[in-house]
Length: 341
Image (cartoon, rainbow, N blue to C red; front, side):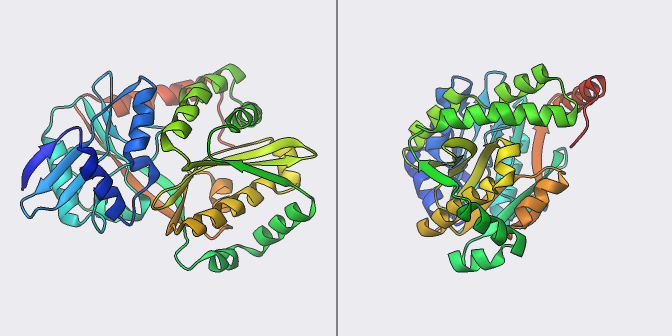
């Protein structure tokens, strides 16, 4: 079904594919892969397919030292197939069929939630599916339509933040990232207390997920398309969000001092600033990231007009990695008395 498969994908083909795919996200870009490789934890394992009809497909992938490959790994966003006009059923069938024939220790794909059913219809027989839950905001009708799509309570909260004099600052070069991580420490402490998780375990998990050097590398490699907004009250930072820009926008990280930020609706004001910026760049979609099974988080996003999506993360494993990992997490949660807030 293919005339050629090359890995890593040639950069010219990759650039052409991401430019021509209406669903493309910044986490599928070669610059994002370069930032991940710069951490020393991954190698570029992207794959370029050329079909017998001459159609060009690119799958961004990262390989860990263990040999496990993912598009993209946990905490590195959304991956999946890039193709002119967006992936088709034939494209998905071809790529997943090829991956199923390989003997890698583990391969996984976390596709764009907007393409969930396309992938779900072509899952290989021996694949493991982990259901993910995310939210996406449609920007195609412009900024006025986005504002009208907010709930009345959301519009009222943003107005209150503006009248309260919440100061908003932004940059796209990583200079504000230390503020984000200071706020993240406070947010993790508040979350751990609420979920009955030991503070040491919360700090360990947070460090595994994100570090300041990691995001400084991302900001450097994305060269102006990784943008951060910070809200200040009386000169003190109370909330921060990080949004990636490209063909579409992706809200990927948030942190706040919940007690202070919540009183003045600071995070809502930051989201509104980011959504306006996304509309100005011509983005069609504003990905709001993983929501899990948290009702309050889902409600927070839906009050902006974002739609919920359940989408499959596909895993192909030679060993029962997912089963062992799930069992271990369950045991740890029982031991520490973890409770979902």
